[in-house]
Length: 298
Image (cartoon, rainbow, N blue to C red; front, side, top):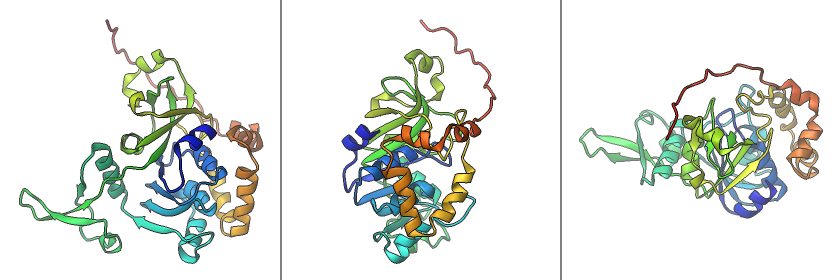
């Protein structure tokens, strides 16, 4: 991860660390913080804790997002401080609906000039964001809202497994991982396992990301903690509750970052500090999918 961030993330870049509830690569965020990148534009459907920590560390200058909060808990206090008080630095925000962000990624992935959507009818978001505009439907159905393409400079996508050339498989709540992967200029895939090519070939429908668009692979078990990876570990709900208390105070937040990010050299040290008991507590249990016969191939 250290090498991937060093090679592919520069000051001023637009960065997407996606994952809808699951597959949120906190390990990538922590390494970006550790390397003290500056003036990043952070893009994400649901910023939640991962971007609250990055904003608290002062790495971000702008946030492009839809829905902002600590899921099921409350506010993101670090982002709120940055927006309202400029602590630790001012933060520009650009807000869309969930579907608006999905549309932006789809347009970026498809190299389209914009993405049309009807769900802004009656919404006040276009008044708050001049990037949401209207065009006349060329088929005569009146005006329709459009959003511009979103093409992050670099994206970090977490997944269950890939082979050595980056053919990447995901299952569960996959969110917009595929769309972001194709939209990004540079793509880093982080996986729980690197497996043999034949493991991927035997289950081709799970392959959402082809290796031909992957710039780097990082093998980082538990890299998405405190979020979850289907079949590998569960969501650490206690962490989300604890963050709400810590993040209410900037000094306490800085203390947490010092202890859990700056003072640790890598994710392995983070896991050691977290402890075996906590990792075992997050074991997902067993519910195997049924086998599927794809038939032999020539």
